[in-house]
Image 1 (cartoon, helix red, strand yellow):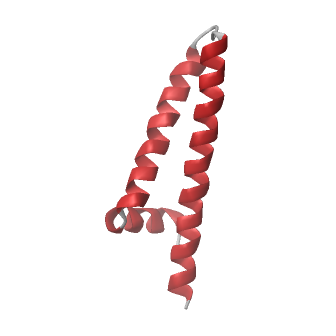
Image 2: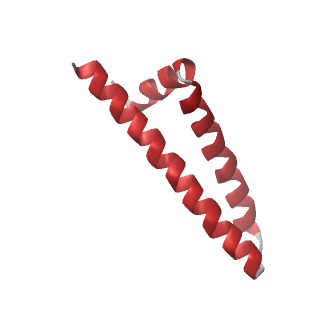
Length: 75
């Protein structure tokens, strides 16, 4: 089963997964807006780094949930 199929299933079946995906996308859009700025203040740079770490955490958690789903289906 492909990742896209698993993602669609988990979005429908798992509230936590759905929230992680939504938050990851929201952070992605926000970081895109920050990247469009010509210059970031030092506070904005710090915020950007924090948001990047948070986004990476969500991505890792999403990937973990996909692996768990695959493992359960393989049994």
